[in-house]
Image (tube, rainbow, N blue to C red; front, top):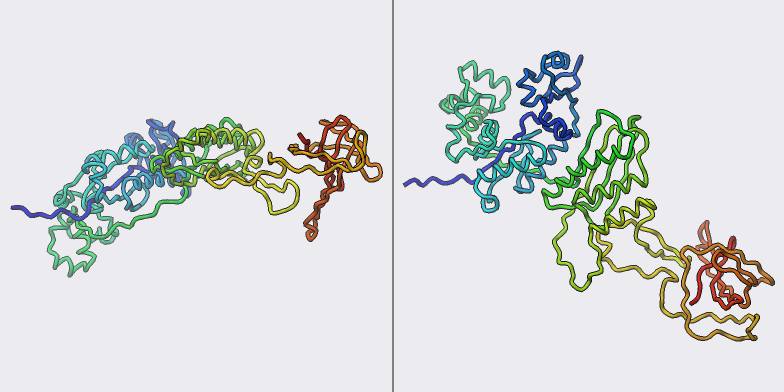
Length: 522
């Protein structure tokens, strides 16, 4: 009977051919289906650093100059290399890999290794998982091929085989690697040249050498290379940690100066960001953007949604509102969009609170309000620790505001009955010392109305405002409140309760500079 023991680990290699070209096509979807060449600056001219399959079929190879590419009879699309595009594509691949495996190693641009241990119960056998990884990478706009084996070199060789998914079974790696060239080992040029002088051209020829003789001539390095040629690699993966920010950038070959064109670019970036968040079941509680102007200056901004958002529509609504309240100005040559990811646990909506607005509707409403009055004018009122009337500041709305305790009512907004102040000054229709009895409600005016109040003998006798006007027949006060006398901006506030000749009761206030109509009694 055969008592072979299955290997303790299985690895998948996610390989993106011509990664710089794939990243450029992802940044500009209109290039899809065209031959694309990526150029980098190198004295004395720009040279080709990557070319996709269609460009290589036209005879373009890395190392050619831009002049040689342009002179070819069959035209190709040339783009300069943008590191931000490659970083965004690489990060998107990493996030997709983290959504499938907790242990992911970044082996360089366009090459990832995933630990497949225990994943068969979640995604099926290795072939099914490989096809799933390929589909997810294609959905991100970065076509990738997948190789699965028991070692890095075996998985990488399977990924470079050309098939969309190639699975090398355990125990078959040595035979699979035998016909491959020595370049698969990625050893130093000196070591590769030395092996070639011995007549070693393939991995199989290297693995067939006697170990003792190889050690005598090449030392431990020779034995290490021989083990790799046989598919034996016991080195553990070096997993990398997920980032704290999801970022997408776009460098424009032309400048834009209209809000509509800027929104088109942001819409495309928001689609990428939302796709990356959805791949990990995440949302964002803060969105930041920065626009690089053609003159070298930058314009940046941020917005905090009332509830975390993850859908493209919610992000675009917030960005549109932010641009309407403050556009970058000038011509824009590059845009970066960042999202701070958070994980929102699923929660059952309470059956006894049907009045609570839906998160998406609340976010859209706040975005429209911010577009009308400005992002700094929409928030949560917070009382200040001061006796100053209306000492309130507006704090930005952040996630979790709906769950924290509601602040106390603003001064004057309370609806509970108040004991009225007595108006003891005699006037028309009032006897000396008469008082109003009963419960009254003071309704504050937000904001207070400017008023003109002349004084006779230090007491108000007339009220003129755009809301109320008339002769004052009775008054009580003043009641003074003051504070912050220890600072450079002390304040005081005198209040009067007055009755107009038509029987209307109201409250006036004076701060040493102007009169205000503060409220009206019911």
